[in-house]
Length: 224
Picture (tube, rainbow, N blue to C red):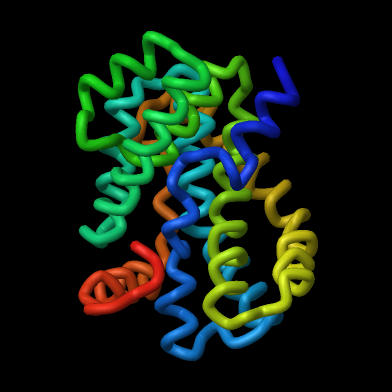
């Protein structure tokens, strides 16, 4: 298992398309729910323990070898917002392209053939971790970190927030990320034994509602 591969996969400069998405931060800023460092921390913590947890379980389960098509269908069922399903598949398609170029693997090729419009990003992330020789805990950490780093980075642009403050938010969330990653791996092991019904369905209704409103904006800085 290569720690260097984990650094490459988790690097925000990995060309997986995440820079074009705010993880709901753009809508939250417009609604006045995120205005500064503390409110960004509250937003990220809520996202981490809901959609971030689900994403981390999906990624860990895919890294363990659970059928990615089954996981993809489960991800669809746990994403009520059509706008967020579309965003997840676009991100998944871009990550698939980057992963196949970086860590060629037959399982990535098979998923690309089965889901030409893209599978859900966390499922692709887990399969990418598997192709890179990483384990389910690595995949879970990547998913958990992405769930908060995207909004934090976007808020720097949206609010002209001091990057030091945004980085401080991420650092203070480290214990939460540890907790979510541990829970995700435990749940992924249950999924392998019991099937996709063991996947959590932690919901964030306001994120779903805001995503639908955001998708209808005539002008926006981020795709989601």
